[in-house]
Image (cartoon, rainbow over all chains, first blue to last red; front, side, top):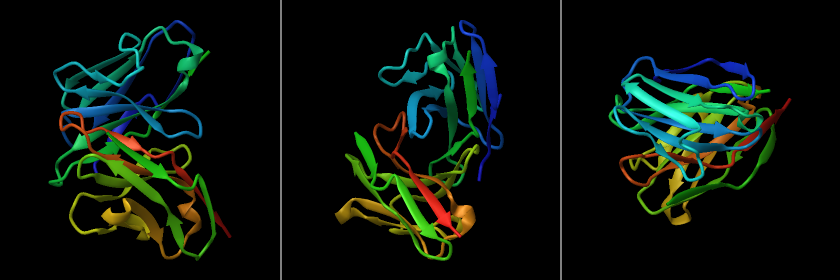
Length: 117
Length: 115
């Protein structure tokens, strides 16, 4: 299947700093990418939908000013956690929508583990 | 709106015996349904998907799932479990407005395979 990468795979930062996470579709173009958050031993919760060339759509309860999303090209979306706090520590996963096979499939990145001290 | 319910949070089987992971869905639209697997410290991998073609869907690693509209179910099965199948499995439904097409995840089922 198609490949989606995330960088970094894990990051530790101090409280109050900002962290940027990149999501790339490596062998297909993705007009739409999604950002999820996964808490320990829990399911994935959709945070926002990232659309190339337009503003992201955030789910209810997700602060758009805290979780900045930019989808400037067809292969790259970024999530910036601004002024991170310990409660933002989590596993962040992106997915990219692919139509290459003729049907829509979402491929997931390997995730980024964020620890805020 | 759509939702998905995974009926078992944990399933334990012996190696070589059949696997059944249960999933029921709810969707206002004709749903697309998926099963994803997540191994420890690894990303999500697509096992199989149903998108209104054949109701019995075959996936990778010997897994298959049957879409039953009358029962709103999409259970995942495998005839013979292998140790490497131990992982977290997510049943996922896609529906909703065309513009976003976001996925809704079930709560997950942790599969343990005993030697």
